Length: 71
Image 1 (tube, rainbow, N blue to C red):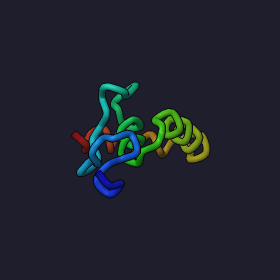
Image 2: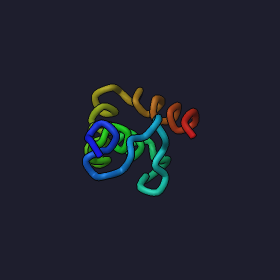
Image 3: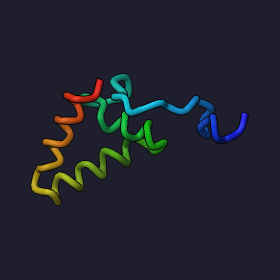
Image 4: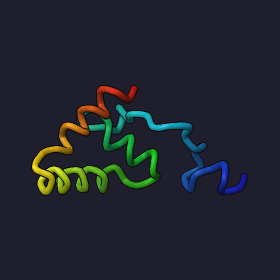
């Protein structure tokens, strides 16, 4: 198949954002974001920690909102 219908790892593209509870640490938000954008979940986690330290904790509220709203 062509690259439009397949990701580089051979999986079909996702229709939308979903939590990745199998690879997730707490709720699976960072793993879901990493899966959705095709990047490593550890990079998303490091970015989230950096944003939390620089953003005075407001990303924690965003994380909880995504965890409660997403499936």
